[in-house]
Image 1 (spheres, helix red, strand yellow):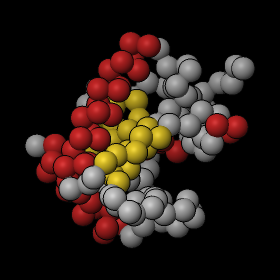
Image 2 (tube, one colour):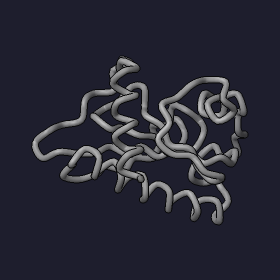
Image 3 (spheres, one colour):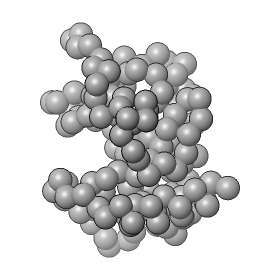
Length: 141
């Protein structure tokens, strides 16, 4: 399978600043921001700054650097929401459930007895995302 990277995907546009996001973290390796269609409170996305369609085409050294950011932001999200656990999701290609073809990790703070919301396509109010982003930013400090 050799499918090329599309530099016009929504996450590439977010990286270029063409589309706004509720940012929680950024450095030379990664950008983390709130998912606009969250499946739970604190649902955060972490994406690499390199052009990678999925897990199978990112250079290993870039993935190594990226995963340390995923861990750091996941820990901050758990702290920010006083969560009982964390779900990490990552999908590859349509058959694997991927919908945006730029590598991304979903971080979902989890709470005992609380199911994830279904992926309905409903967008969260921007004020809620801004507030949740601020909680994670504070936990990273």
